[in-house]
Each structure stands twice: as C-alpha cells, then as structure tokens.
Length: 355
Image (cartoon, rainbow, N blue to C red; front, side, top):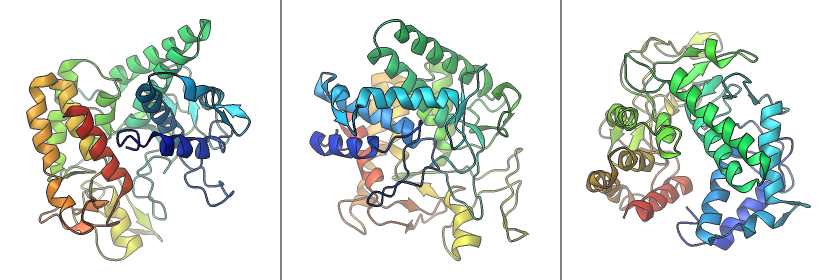
C-alpha cells in the first residue's frame, strides 16, 4: 500500500525496521521499542518477501536489496528466512521435504484468534503455500548463479503440490488448509472443505495459473462477498468440523461454524465469529484482483465495480478510511477498528493496479 501510494521512503524504513529483527527465519508480529518477542506468525516473514518485491519493482532496480539492515543486507535477510524455513524455524515453521509445502503451527496465520482457538489452521494453510511459492520465485530471480535453479525447482514443486493436494474435486475450489500435526507430511494431511477467501491469494500470487481452476476459485468466493468486504467463512455446513471450546464448553455448532454477527462477550462470542463469518476489508480487493487474473481485461469492469462498493464504507465512520471488519449478516454493521491500515492500503494497491 505504501508503495502504491508512492511513499517508497516510508516503505523502505518499515521494511528495514522489521528486517533488522529477523532471526532464524522469524520476524516479529509487532515491535515495542526493542521488544520483538512475539514471533507467533508464519505469514509475516513471507509478506516481507512480497513487500520487498513490490518495492524493487517500483524502483526499477535491485539497489534496495544491497542496503544495510542491522549489519546485513536485505538480500541476506531474505535468504536467511527461506533457508531457515526449509531447515525448521525455532517456532516450528518447516518445509515438508516431499511436497515442499510449509507447515504452520496453530494460530500462526492472520486467522490467529486464541484462548479460545477460533481458527487454529494447524498444518498447511493455502495462503501460506501461495506466499511461499511467491517467495521462492522471487529468490530464483535475485539469487544469481546455480542457487537460482534450486529456488526455481522448489517453487515448481510447491506449485505442483498445491495443484495435487488442495484441489477439492467435488466442490471445485481449493481447500483452506491441510490439517496436520507437526511432522505429518502434507500428502497424508486432512483437507478442509470450508469455503474461505484465503485461496484467492493462490490466484493473485501466481501459484495457480490454470484458467479453469482460477475461475472456479473466484466463482466459489463470490458467495462470500458483501459490499466492500469479504466473509471469512461461507454460511454453509462443513464436513471438516470446527469445534471451538472455552473452559470446557463448546461455543459453536462444529458442523455449521459460520457466525454472522461480531458482537457480545469477547471470548465466547466475538472471538468465535472473528474469522468464521465476519467480513474483512483487507482481503476483499484480492477477490477483484483474482477476478482479473482469471478473466483478463474482460473482467476489469466487473472487478472495478466491485471495488467501487467500498465507496460507501469510505464515506461512513472514519471518513476516508475503511473499517477493519463488518458483520457477515445483513445489514453488515461496521465493527472493529474504524480505520484499518491494511484494509485501505490493499484497496489502494489493487485500485492502482487495475485502473
């Protein structure tokens, strides 16, 4: 978003601030002064790759990769992240050697509610694999010499594994997560049939390039749309049950985990709904981006029309911004943070890309 807003100097500063805290393949979820202990995240290090790639594309050169960051170059930090993930990070992120997919511990993705665990997604979440594919593809471009071919081979295997293991033939869309315990290979993990929007990133990040599959993904995710946001879970029954337990009490219907209203007590009401039906603004633009990836220029008018549905949100509440979340159920009341940075930045990024 900062790059799209042409605030490249700020983007550089943010990346270098987080990059200097990289250690053994991990990057902090948040930084409080010099306190960077919270590293329970599998996607932050991978989004670091995406942000670096966006910045050097905007610059038109790779100079940023050679800038010093805590005694190392950005390039070396990126290589450290990938190499550590392949070998296993201290917090349990590791590459499955057969599929080359990344294992993610429970509550390490953006769907990170805990106590109670609303969406643990322990195993192989789809967007983590899409980000991993993009990271490996980026390394194949920037790590010259024989290593380039090695990164490219890993990326190709990740792409093949996504095609082989995530495609739900009956439903037509991609599994949200291959559920597995640590050290369980991806090929024997349990595919989840819940319809969630995370699969859109497999299309936008190039992990899925088959047009027919891309179109099935966006067609399925249409069910999740509301004006200006996208639901985190479809309002339908699931085969892969999701039981949310708090102090020994089951809080939801495991066979029908959708919850369309984000209100009430935090632990027993809001947390179970947060990623199980609540609509989010940050991932909504990715639907529009994926639509164009699936349909090309012919799909742009529809994609831009969907994006324009955010105008209502920008005009309400904290004017000029979009809220963090909305109720999945009508009338889709705005909830959470009134001005969500990653919501408005993604809206700007995709608008600039598609306009």
